[in-house]
Amino acid sequence: MKKTPTYFLFDIKNNTAYITVNRPDKLNALNTLVLKELSEILITLEANEDVRGIILTGAGDKAFVAGADIKEFQEFSSDEAWQLSKSGQEEVMDNLYTFPKPVIAAINGFALGGGLELAMACHIRVASEEAKMGLPEVSLGIIPGYGGTQRLPQLVGRGKALEMIMTGDPIDARDALQWGLVNYVVSQKELISTCERLLERIYQRSNMAISAAIRAVNIGLMEPEKGYEEEMDAFANAFDTPDFQEGVAAFLEKRKPNF
Image 1 (cartoon, helix red, strand yellow):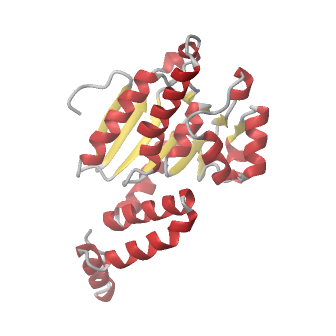
Image 2 (cartoon, helix red, strand yellow; image 1 turned 60 degrees about the vertical axis):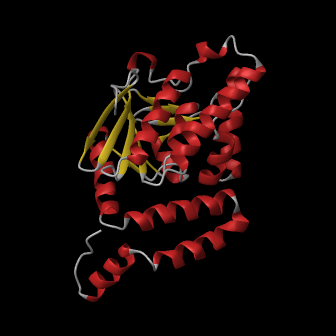
Image 3 (cartoon, rainbow, N blue to C red; image 1 turned 135 degrees about the vertical axis):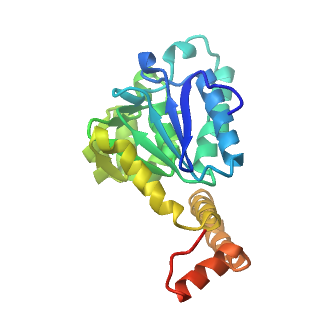
């Protein structure tokens, strides 16, 4: 990073970028400045060839991100609210969702509203046993604005998503695991190490193939009619890459590939 982040703790170790939302006194709530800074961090990390994956979490042991900074909403007009939703989705949530390197959300506490939307934009979610997740926006007379109405049904199905959105009630980590909202539930002390082990396994595979797979999966979800075509193209294009040559050679020589 060219400058020290204001709202984040940031570190890079062993090809992994650690991004920690650092507003524990506000339960790591999102506002426009936090989202802008996160967008800048993601742009930097995408261009950094030394970074192969990201772990995103929140400071402290109470919250991943407890939601948006509601005080910021008070004076917004509908036009300003629309622009907030648009910029948040396009510059942060969509960027995370389509990020060409694996991003794991380490959900260490409350992930509510925009916090859950942030976690759902990541590729994989690991939750601590104490975590609680929900979209309580209807309690404020609004609805989720950072992709929650679209990504939650993809993960838990239409019925459970509508229940969570319409009641606004959070669910605990075990229910989140049962419904497919998170991949793993672990103790708080094992949270980051579990994410690190997942990334270590991913790092043994081809970066190129992983990026292509992320893109193919995302296109299939966002534009189902184009998903199979994207998969066929990516599959074929892989045959012209050094990673394919190395992967096949390693398989035939009964050794680990050197990607």
